[in-house]
Image (cartoon, rainbow, N blue to C red; front, side):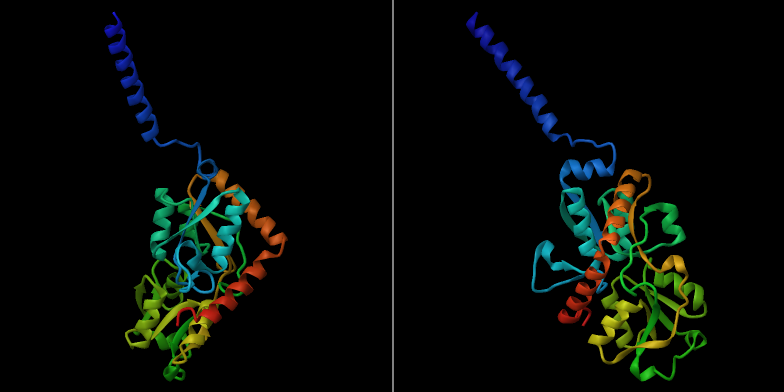
Length: 281
């Protein structure tokens, strides 16, 4: 009798262990992304760290601490606001939207401007303001070509580079329709192609362009500049479509950051650090 009871108990214990292991292996589900962020205690943010002073790397540091810039300060602020840890997920700029829509990350903060296609496919936050980085959009050219390129017509038929899926790509398509548009993934690659003569110009946010010129004396900002519509002038946080709870929380956080005057401080700090590090040298 005791042997039978012992066998039954062993069987029950084995079944219980199987159910317990199954429960451990099953990932918890959440009602929405905001609930997931708070439940896991982590805010995952995709960014393309090649866009000083918005997001770039500090080579003297490793791990998460190497990612610096205005947008990184904003991401950390949001993580603190939600009471969670921040995890920066670096990737190519054109990969960030895919990471958001697939749910690989909670959001992307990477110098995104508002654009109609983005507004259609994502939840976009209220605008935040990063100095003059987006209010002015320009072209980088070689100093030797200063007199050669002074108007939009001068770029007809020549190679003009822009980062894939960026506002700069849109501006080239709209305002330099006769240029030979060339797309690149990383801004550093675009700068190299320009210096090597494979491009005659690359489109950049002016704040970013100033950083590049400061570290590359063979380059300059073209005297001709793009016209920038008001809706393009500021940046937005990109969130997956339908995640309205997270959108509302981010907008509330942004409103409080603006009221506290954090934007100017973050931008000045990012600009000073980019100059100190020679970002995009």
